[in-house]
Image (cartoon, rainbow, N blue to C red):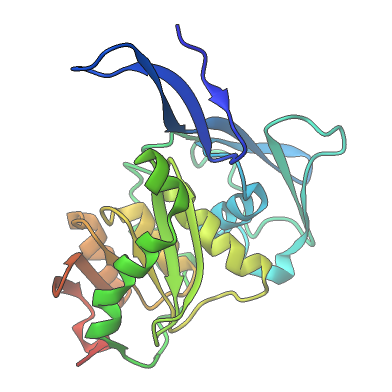
Length: 270
C-alpha cells in the first residue's frame, strides 16, 4: 500500500499513483480525511470524518446546526482539550446545551452523510428562528455566487475532492468560505466561522453550495437564520419541502446564466 504523505496545506496530502495509460509512477494530490471528536463540557458528543483545519468552527457550527446552541452567547470557549488529545476539539458552554441530546441518536457522521434519514421537520420548526423579512437577492447575485466561490476553493482546485460552502450577504459580498471532504462539514465550518466572529444568526445572508442541496444542509441553513441556499447541483424532495416550510429561497442547478427556483421566489429580484 502506498503511504499518503501530508504536505504544507493541512487540507491536502500526496500519494504515489500509476496513471493509465502512462508510464511509471507520479505523485497525486488528495484531500485529507481524518476523524474529529467533538466534546462539550468534557463529554464526547460526536465523531465526524472531516478535512483537518477549522475544527473550532466545525464544532460550534455542528452544535448550532443541531439546535444545541443558539448563538455566540452560549459559547465560553472552544479549542483543544486540557490534555491536548489529538483529533479532539472541546466546546465549553456558558450554561450547557439548549437541550440534552442523549437518546436522540448517535452522532457518528461520515464525510458523505450528515443527518441522513432523520425525520426532523418538527425538530427544525421547534428550534429554528422564525423566518425573517430580508432585502431581496438579485438574480445576478445568484448567478455569480458559484463562480466567485469556486475561485476561492484553493484545495478543490488541487485535489478535485472537496465540497465547499460559501456564505454571502444579500448584495453578493462573500462573508466566509470553507472546504471539507464532507458537504455538511463545509456548511458547519462556514456557519461556525460566522458564529465565532459574533455574526449569528444570519438573516438576509445565503449559503452557496458546490454540490447538491440535501435536507440536512437546508436544516443547518434554517437554524442559522439564512434567507436561502444557492446550489450548483440538485435539491432533494425533503430539502424542497423544508425550504418551503421555512419560507427560504432554494435555487438549484445554478450554472452560467440559468438556474431553477424551488422555493422562495418572492425573495428574488431582477
